[in-house]
Length: 164
Image (tube, rainbow, N blue to C red; front, side):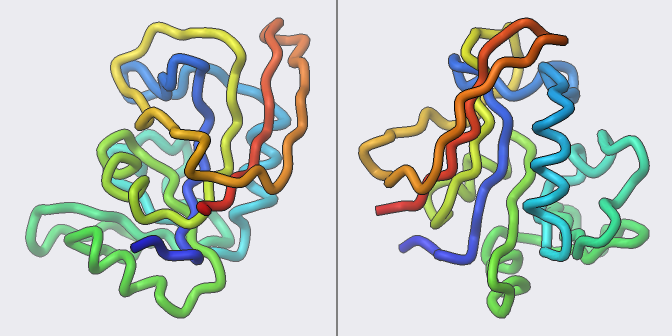
């Protein structure tokens, strides 16, 4: 069963790499602006390592929901849940809630997410964290924009997908 209001937003390399040493593989200014525009005013769901990797803590103008498996653990400025099911229940009344990482959280939400917002770099990166391989036959393309980033010197695409 998928949840139409659960969306994953992620920047991936063409080899599905997403991170190394608890950091992003690349920084695209336009992607960060896109992320902020899409997620502002909505709930964001993440694991605690993703929270700790954010330079300024919880994301402003968003309902920050942290998943941890340590009973009683809490995080300043955030709501805490202790399972994927609890996270789904916490956002049941949200029009759209965004899963923002990390790798283990993405793997658990991928089978139930109703939408994917991908920024795909058209090159491979060395990484220690990967996104699940996307079977594009399971998704309809809602929109696609092909771009080039001069600072990083590579092509990338913003692809918004809806589960079939």
